[in-house]
Image (tube, rainbow, N blue to C red; front, top):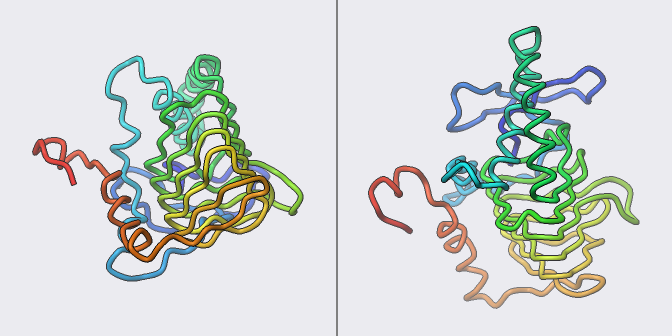
Length: 234
């Protein structure tokens, strides 16, 4: 999942244009460190960011307020000039406030945060600014996504769930619909649709029935505005 706004900054790596579905008012840019590719097919649309997951339900919604400050800052930097200068400064202040409230460390220059990111309990979450988080991921408390024994930083695919206290370290690739168990330490790649548990993490292949149900669980997590307005759920 790419971030809502992924502008070029002076000195940053070049971006490769790509589509930004569902957000016509946003720049169509994507960072070079893109998320792992999702296979084409009838379920490929699950990689489309569900931005309603990041929409605030009320004012005191710390995790979504934190994400919104990040998105607004990146949009302001994209605009540039005086039009973007003051909104960027305001977004910095908001980001500092909500970072203090949540206890999370997600830098403002973390450009590759995919849309639809959920942080149910943001306390203690640390994300490296160069890490890539795919669309519609869910990250729980005390998670660290950063450098490790393998050169590089992690790349998470779409619909990845990272359990409380987990550590994803180094240049590992986490496939689509993968799950990282609580307190796991991931230092190797995790294939799509599998579960990684333990220290160091060991990949567990899901039973066939459970593996085939993974996309359906992903559907359960996609509560779009249209469905809420109709009062229905998947």
